[in-house]
Amino acid sequence: MALAPDVSSSTDPQPLEDEGTHINAPGLQFFVFGLFFIFGGITSLNDVIIPKLKELFTLNYTQAMLVQFCFFTAYLVIGIPGAKLVKRIGYMRGAVAGLCLMILGCLLFTPASQTATYALFLGALFILASGVVIVQVVANPLISLLGPPSTTHSRLTFAQAFNSLGTTVFPIVGATIILGSLATMSADQLSGQALVAYRQAESEAIWQGYLGLAVLIGFVAAVVWMFRNRLHGEKHEASQGLAGLDLLKRSRFGYGALCIFLYVGAEVSIGSVIINYLSQERVLGQPENVIGWMIGLYWGGAMVGRFLGSYFLRLFSPGKILAFNAAGSILLIILSISSAGQVAAYSLLAVGLMNSIMFPTIFSLACEKLGPRAADGSGIINVAICGGAIVPLLYGVVADATGGNLAAAMIIPIICYAIIAGFGIFARRPATA
Image (cartoon, rainbow, N blue to C red; front, side, top):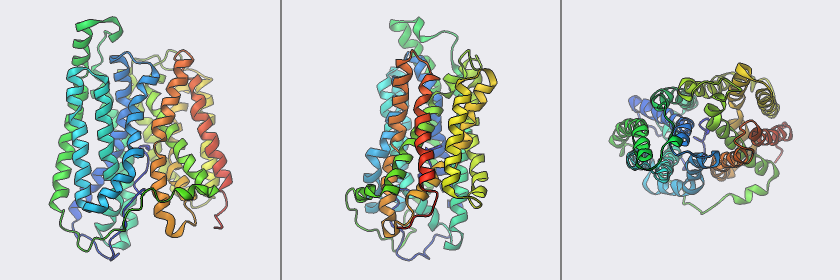
């Protein structure tokens, strides 16, 4: 997400033939942990640039949501081809290929800003996201190889903590850099060359921020490239097209895949508009550059919820916990849209806490008893993450159809969470087959 969605287990190539094979390079682990930090950060940074681009290009909410549409469509378009690429060239070179694609996407923000062209921003986001997808295909098995099998679980858990940290830190820093430069003048007050000049000047913070990201990613890519020949005996099974689609006929898996689609869509929808939502007079009535940092509370809640959820999931049925959290999300949204001031603000921000355990819980419940088909199921789940492209766009359409009423459009995530709650009840007992 997506949270940034937790997709590290999706569409992974097969592990090395010898499960005991690993790289004795502790330093490299921290750079791969850094990848998880960057994944989460880049995805949640979209929530910061959406209000910026919306103001610069005087967009309606449907047009602004094209940011998420272009970003998350990459999961649909690149997910399976990315896995095939990694199987062809290997884990390490596959990671570098994905990182280079991410760098290209970051660099394309410069011409997009200098020409003040919204379509170029969208193209840059798609390329950036394509690189993210490819590197995510690699990240999970690569982490498992950077140490003995007995400590794989702890390394993966630690890596996911970095992912959550990224979704919390990036929006706070990004809001300061990107939204902090918002001028007192508005784009809708200008026209002609004055408008073009304003857009070029005000988008400078965007390309500078992404240029800094390109440098950071380039450093990580160089380190990974140094270890490109350190894996020996690496073998992968041949790719078989869109293997796994037949799994959708299984009611438990099909329902679960739908819920992944809806969960990512609902989470991204709220995150995308939360700055605009909080700035409304009914809520906090503060400028976006003042309250922009609060998006970090939304994603920070997801980080905290993961630690709490890992404890409660040991005590109660995962399905019941999922249903509880989904119902809690609905109640918090209703409280927010029916109240005002800080109650309206913090109740919506608290939805991030409810989101925390949803992706891994839905994933595990959907994939129970798949056995040797687990990899196929993982691939379909990865494709389902494209809900982050479709649902936010639908949210924007509803918001525009109701005169820009962000509260009224909350019916979209409410419906999503209601269906997810139903899945929790449906899957509250262990799968039998």
